[in-house]
Length: 396
Image 1 (cartoon, rainbow, N blue to C red):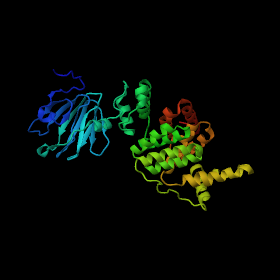
Image 2 (image 1 turned 90 degrees about the vertical axis):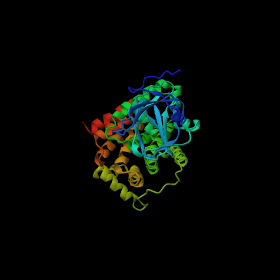
Image 3 (image 1 turned 45 degrees about the vertical axis):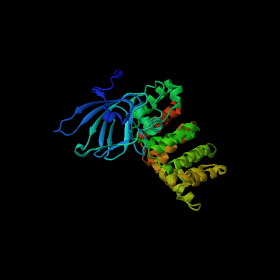
């Protein structure tokens, strides 16, 4: 008796795979030829997988293109993380790349299989994708009725491929609300910010708030999207000047554990560019280039019993931290802004660093964009305070 197959695309499902192919699949799949003209020489098939169905590891001497048309599935090349597939996704598989593809555990899945270079394209079938491999590749796929948009799923998967969300299982309604908002609506308003920059600013915000659990999530996300270990450390080091080492030290240890788990040897290569002899001079020069010559007058105006604080700002805050390599000045100033608006109670410093950001090349749009991206993590009151400061210093 034929299984009840849901309608997940406009293409024909076809018939169960014949024995010559089905022996290379775990679970039931269906095949519908769509284009077989010998004159065109470009075979196209619609392949439909029942939940949990996948093909063996295999390769094509001429490569293959997959066009996803329904449901949710996965593709994995040997030695690489699995990639979640949703309608509209295209997978270009180079010749001789060993891979598998199939349905998610909780969803039917359908893709068009386009045979490339058919004149010399031969399949080589290998061992099955066993239950342990499949479970690891699709971890996080099964949740309790969390209805997420395609954009929310893709943006979340970019940061945490295959993440198994405990909260989605215990609090599906909250995750549905939050993820559709934070990973779809909010990211739509990211402007010119790239994923790396957005992720680094959220890391700085988490440190400023003492949000260790979320910070660890975003360290892993940052490394997943190509943020360097050096940049991860530089965010931590700079945060000491604004948040204080009493709070930062736990984040430092957490980051070290994550880096070690990823096989990254510590300590990393040094990034310092100053010496004890020139740190004050270089720090003051950097302060002037960021905030203008008037910054030098701050020490003269300070009470005698507080002039040493101005020396610390020059030699330590700017001389020891801002002069380091690993992050450029635009990123460092944006990071400081992100930390300050996340802490709260720093209105005067926020206004000063809004001007500093402008002076190093971060315009109003950039500051509004990053404030928007931080909103899900800092809440509305601090977001609105930050926007008021932007409007005051940089009117539209």
